[in-house]
Amino acid sequence: MALATATIIGWSLLAGIVVDLVLFYVASLLGRKISGKTGLVPLISEEDKYPSLARFQLLLWTFVIVFAFVTISFVRIFSGVLASVSFTTNILTLLGVSVASPVISAGVSQAKYSTGGKPLEDAKDYKSLYTMVEENTVFSVTRFQMLAWTFVSVIIFLATLFTLLSNLPSPLSQLGLPDVNSALVTLSGISQGAYLLGKGVSTPNKAAPSAAA
Image (cartoon, rainbow, N blue to C red; front, side, top):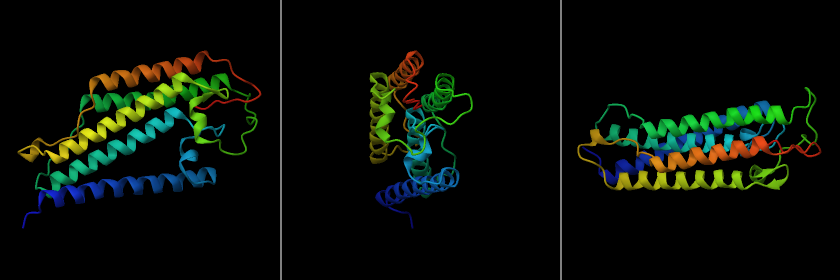
């Protein structure tokens, strides 16, 4: 007997949530093995124990895309459509930019805040999450802009996903991941470029190296 559409969507959403929770739990265990602490901050912090904005964005988008992919995949599977779900060009572009940003940011941090192999000062404990929007202990507009556009893009993407689930196409073989608006991809790229530029041109504070990524 075929499952009702509402039941299929409900179980599919649950599957997406469970997979994300399992992934976060596994990541937390791995982070605890390396850092000795659990939670979000150790997962996104660099060697100086400042939370990395670029890493946070990458982690957030990873969980959001995994949730959408698993949910859509289970809707198709429960409905008898076994073909795999493909990624759109904009999603792949967004993920590529999100991956590149922490790599470049880490390189900038290492160059600016290098201590010649010596431990960074005041790196005994992990810093608060709000330091992601600070540069050298000062509020950074470029960091805040990047964080803002990240949340705006994620909210719009999830809203598009739920709208798609409430208006399933026929046949369901046409059901795929919701696309990310090209304008949002462009704005995300610009905000990350501004963030990296602001990080690169800022003057390091040797006394308080807020080398947050």
